[in-house]
Every structure is written in C-alpha cells, then in structure tokens.
Amino acid sequence: MRPLIPNVFNIEKNQINEQHYSNINYIKNNFTSSTPEKSLLLQINKHTLTLTDSKFIHHNKTLETTIQCVGSPYNQSCLYHNLYYVNSWYMILTVKGKQLPSYSVRTDAFTMLHTTPSKRVFDSYSHLERFVRTVIDPRIIPKGETADLNQPWHDNIGHALFDGLYPAFVALIRFSPRHLHPFRILAGIDNCNTCWSEDIYSRFGGLGILKQSVLNKISNGHWFMFEELVMGSGTLCQRCTQSNLQLPGGVELDGSRLFRDRIYQQHGLIHPIIRHKSSSEKRTPHDLLLAYIIDNKRFTSNDRKEINDAINEINNYTDSFLNNTSKLQWPLVRVSYLFYNQLRAQNLSSIQINATPTDSRSPIYELIENNFIAQLKILRQMDIHITGPDTGQMYQTFLSDGSITINLGGIRPWGLENTEKAYSSYLEQHMTSGTPYIKGLYYPINERQKGIKKDEVIKLIRQASKLILEGFSLPVNAHDNLAPDGQLFVEMCEKDKEFCSLVTTRTSNRNFACLDFWVEDFVHEYRQWQVEGFIDNGRNISCPFNHTLLHELRKKYGIKHSKLDQ
Image (spheres, rainbow, N blue to C red):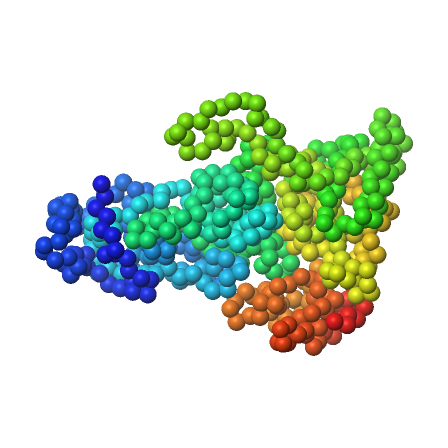
C-alpha cells in the first residue's frame, strides 16, 4: 500500500509557487518524532533517502519537469515532460539554476487569460527525487501523449470537432510526429448524457478520455504526474479569426488533411481517395458524380421546394443519358437530399454478446459502428457537398481530395430575412479556405437574400461537375476558396492593421464584441460595426475601423449594400 498521508500535503496554489525545498528538512519540519507517519516514512525509505543517483523505470528517466514550447508567447503550445498535478492545478518540479522557457499557454479560445503552472524549486536533483519518491509518490499517467482539450459546447458537433478536438490535434502536430501516435485526451468538458462527441474524442485519440472534472476531485491531496502533456491550443480553433480568413493550421501545418485522415483511420474506415495534382485524377469524363444537399435549418419551405425541383431536373437528365453518353451536354450527376440526423449505424442488437464484470467497456466497442461512422461513409463518397451555413458546413473537411463544396448561404440579420435590411451570409467560409484539397463555390452574394432559386442551384451543381471532371489544380489557392466578402476582409486586414488586430488578437484587453466576428456583419456594418455602434444594456458597443476603405472595397468586390438603420 502506498504511504498516503492525507491533508498534510494539501498546499494551496498560492503557497507553493516558486519555493525552494530540501526534502530531509521538509520531513523534519513537518513531522514530530512521535508521529507514526514519520516513522513509517523513514522505515520505508531508509535506503532511498541516501541515494544521490538512481535509474528510473518510467519513460522519461528523470523526475524533473522539462518543457519545450513552439510558437510565439501569444499562441504557443508547450510539451511538458513530468508535469505534476495536485489539488486541481499543475505543478512544475525543477532544480535551482535550471532555465525553463516561458511556459504560459492558452488552453481555451474563449478564455482570454493564459494558464501558468505553479513551480517548486529544489536545491538539487537528489532533493527533488527524494521528495517525489518519499513524500508525494505520484500516480503516473504514462506515455503515450496526453493532449489538453477544453470545450464548453461539445453537445454541438461543430464546436466539439473544430473548437475542441481539432485545436488540440494541431497543437500535437506542432510536435511532430506525436500527432501520428495514440494519445489520450484530458478533456475540460461538462457532464452530458447525450454528447456523442465524447465517443469521437475517445476513438480519435486511441487512449480514451481523462475528464478534467474527475481528475480535479481525485487530485485533492493526491499527486499525479503526466509523463507527456501537450497544452496550448487556445488560438487554433475555427472561431479564432485569422487575417487570411483560414482555419488555423489548416494550410500551413496541413492540419485539415491530417485531421481528416486520422478521423477516418481511428473510426476504422478506408481513407478517402487521394489525388495529388488535379480533381480529375482517378476519374473518367463519363463518371457519374454523387452530389448531396444537406438539409439546413435556414432553408425555408419555399427554398426546399426550389431545391427539390433542381434535384428532379438534374436527376431526370442523368437518367435520360445514363446509358447514352455520346451526346452529353452536362456531366452526369446523381443528387440526393440528406438529413444527417437521420443517418443511423447498422443495428446489430440481434447478436448476443455477454459482458463480464471486469470488462472496462463494451466488448463490441471496437467492432460496431456508431452514427458518426455512418455519416463518414456518406461523406467519403461525396463528389459535391451542398448546404447552408452553420454546423452542416463543418463536415466539408472530411471530403475526398478534388471534391467541391457549395455554400448556399443564409440570410442575416436573424429575424429580418424578408426586409430590405437583409444581406447574404456564408459564415464558415474560413473552413473552406483552410481546406486546400477541396474547392468552394458560393450562391451569388447579391441574390441570396431573395431566397434560393432552382436555376441558381442547377447552375452551381453543373459548374461544380464540370470543374471536377475537367480538373482543377490541387492544392486549391486559399484565397480562391473565399466568397467575395471573405476576399474583401483579407484585403481590409492588409490595409487597416489596427482593425485587423482588433478582430484577430484574442487578449483580455480586447472588447469581445469585436472578436465575436462574422465577415458579413462587418461588411454590412451591422451592430458593433456601425459608425455609432449600438446600445446594449445602456452601454455603447463600437468597434472602430476605416469605414471609407470598407465602402471602396465593397464597390471593388461588387457587393450591394443598403444602409442599415438599427
């Protein structure tokens, strides 16, 4: 039995920062000669107390904390070896004179402050070793890697994947090749009985989930040691606006493709087809292309009728020429309408498997599909992915090389859809520009506020099919994957540096209303982007920028605008 000594080592975080310790003096000062704990401790450790050099059986061969960090202090990720944890907080154990890099990190994009582990400094390594071996005796959380993940909205699959899992994975990519190995996830998530994203997290990492809330309770008076922990993903989320309007790390770190490939690998599916130079690779001019229109909450009943008419016209053409391709005017496309929430994994309940009392999880966990796997099977075969803004757009990252995503757009502001104040909205175009192995097309920006029309949908699908079979180059230029308002934003960022910093630099001194950024609201000067701002609970909220430059760029990119009067 481990000699746990409760309460004595329950040291508050502000009491243990930057302290120097000699282990023998620590024991002498905290236990009287008559305490049974001291007698037991000295008896158990009568040999180790005199050791000056030891060989360790754990992977790091030392008990001291070492740190490697990548990136600027603003958005760095750090790899900690032997990072300790007690009383719900991280603890670095080091030796006097040892130089450590700056190790504060951002663990959550929606928390503007940095996380800085506490530090305890020892006079020598032998003192540190004795302290670890004879006083705290930590429970080791071993290799492989542990990746820190914080996500308050993991009930929404878009946030769960790209504001939680993806940023943690990109932090691992910074320490290549760790992103290719199995790892566990230290998950700062709330309890949720219906959040199937937790199963995705567990499968994706391969070593399961360690919930922060559980660790916090158990660490009360008990020490743990992470052999390897990567933290620092707070500015790598999809809601972290970049000046180039790309998903962070998607292009420059190849994060989108690596994330996609691991998603398929860890869910037991053959990867999508890889194309290196062109969308037409491994295709023939007469291939039947598969297009899927994914239902979107922003579609009105009339939108759905127009979409259905477009589907019928394209499918009727395909049926007419399926066996006679010599006189084709358009590529052959089969279009289907899809509700993601209606896709279900194969039901294998008829197969009886008896679990034993010692099974740590279901005996069939690795062998059966979940609903996400059923969705991936459809995504893997899509040539053309079509939907409106919001969660449905997130899955475009999982498309095969050389696919096309069509953003049918929506209308903002909410509640003003049928007024002169309405304007087109694409929202997640940064996901498209950050995925260089697909191409993005957009519903015409000056037409969307009139509602979705059959002829425009047909035109977009036929344009996409021709591009695919004629062959567009891979990788796709990120700027070309933006809508006109997205391209406007990138140029605005280049020319108005103060504005660009205002909407991209996530620090505690920034007005969060300016960081809560959507391109379309800015381009049409809505709420905080009006010259006079807007009033919220008696407080004026305004985000300054060069309005004259914006007006010039709206003309350049052909974006019609009606002066909003909020």
